[in-house]
Image (tube, rainbow, N blue to C red):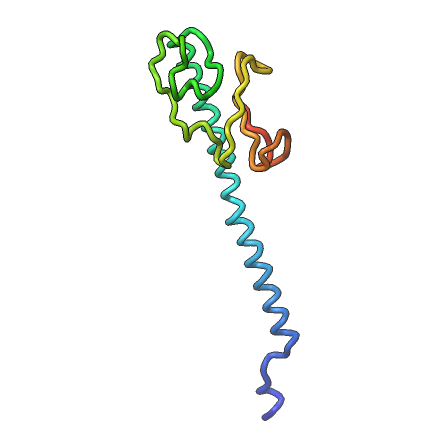
Amino acid sequence: MGSRERGFSLIEIILVVVLIGGIVAFAATRILGGGDRARVNLAKAQVQTLAEKVQSYQMDTGSLPSSLEDLVTQPGGAGGWLGPYAKQAELNDPWGTPFEYRVPGEAGPFDIVSYGADRSPGGDSVDADIRYE
């Protein structure tokens, strides 16, 4: 064989494999990271929807529910209750954690909070708290 008919060297093959691995790793993080962003957007929508259901409960009964469970089953002494206003599954955020509900709220009559992917107060990015505003 002449010098013109030789194959790829080991260094060239390793370099190509490393480059392909880097591209695959970058693509995988972009694709898999989209799930967390989708959960954050879903949690924002759920918080707003739950707040509207709390307001509907308040308009019907004249008072705020003492807990989010009051949206699912009629509490004793709640005259004018026209529920159920929500399903039990709607009381959990996309990470499976129950929404935090407080009456009175810090900035309004009530607060509804999802603690995000880390399931604890505070955090950044997908771990950040999602609040009703």
